[in-house]
Image 1 (cartoon, each protein chain N blue to C red):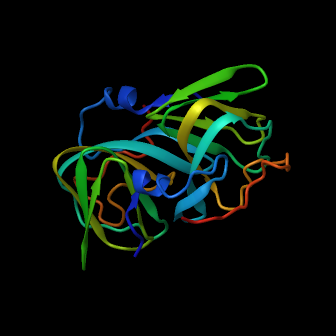
Image 2 (image 1 turned 120 degrees about the vertical axis):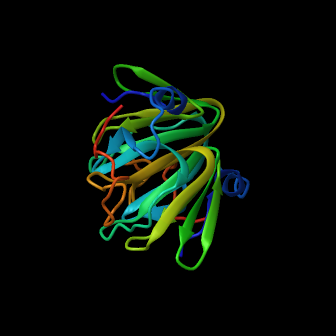
Amino acid sequence: MTKIVNFKEKLATFDELWTPKVIAQMNEVQFKLVKIQGEFTWHSHQETDEVFMVIDGDMTIQFRNHTVELSSGELFVVPKGVEHKPFAKELCQVMIIEPSGVINTGESEGNLTAKNDVWI
Amino acid sequence: MTKIVNFKEKLATFDELWTPKVIAQMNEVQFKLVKIQGEFTWHSHQETDEVFMVIDGDMTIQFRNHTVELSSGELFVVPKGVEHKPFAKELCQVMIIEPSGVINTGESEGNLTAKNDVWI
């Protein structure tokens, strides 16, 4: 049987920024916690939509033609293939929901690319 | 482009119990809000895991051999095919995440079976 996942307890176990940690899996879909601050890189995921759910703090998702502002208790679906750039002025704690195997930087691998499938 | 989903705003739009409302979709996976109070029916979903995430309140998920207690900020994956019975002593607000097409009462259709794929 699976275990209860408490967001606060899981978030207390790491400090690294921009490194999604898997906390649960439903079929092939993974639930990942990530702490973000500052600017990420422009990227897209050609094979899947991606969900951002803010647990604590504020973040923006920049698109090529507009920007979305998200706060705690809000969720946003980035459609498959759409270029986006996450940003947070101050520390923001986020749950990302997407199929297993998705790389955080999508098609833009570089020094922000995190190890995939790291469970906490 | 998809829209920002604010849980509080969406939850303020309905009062019915045990009737999941779809608020977002990622690929084939739907995100549903539901208000629960009292006892649901024993059921299982033969074709999929199911995620419960408590937004506000407390709930239990009864299994045939144990019980899981969930509070706000906690998430639980009910594995595919496992019989379960949700319960909440007082009003509890929950997000359910599962593939589109899943019926709330699974293989136990009856008077608690809700209309599927209702978006708010």
